[in-house]
Amino acid sequence: MSSLVDRKKSAVLFLHAMHREGGGTELRVRYDADHAVEMIANMGHGMPPEASMLPRLKPPPGVKFHPECGGGGGGRWKSEARAQTEMSPMELEAYFAKQLEAAGWGRMAGSADETFAWSSWLIPDSGEWRGVLLILAAFPGSRQLSVQAERILPGGHRGGGGYAFSRLMG
Image (cartoon, rainbow, N blue to C red):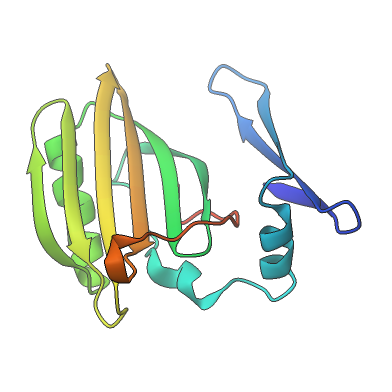
């Protein structure tokens, strides 16, 4: 994954290359001029401290993991991946929940079945930060995963902005 920045024009171009199972490479390109000023400001100072709100999560043994996207800024961070597995969302949520607990996150609520699992989390020592883990089994052998952290401000307002990175690891 790489990004190209034009500070004079306040534009950012993201390039993300991934190996395809059947051979070859998939190249994803995203142009972002709407949030470029904030992203460029963040890039100039390295990763903001709040980027570490998302712990690194590793897949279960034998599960192929394909990180897809991640990023955030201004009070919201997320990381998404696709897993090749027949494990149910319920099993995957339990597996990742152990890693979130080891990172100090505290489970608030959740639910799981054979198609969808979710859990909400309190992120300790973070002020108003909350986390969410989502797992969807929309297609056989493929699971979509998302872990998110969001700062809830007084009055229920939420953060926004943008900065690219990935925490779900293969």
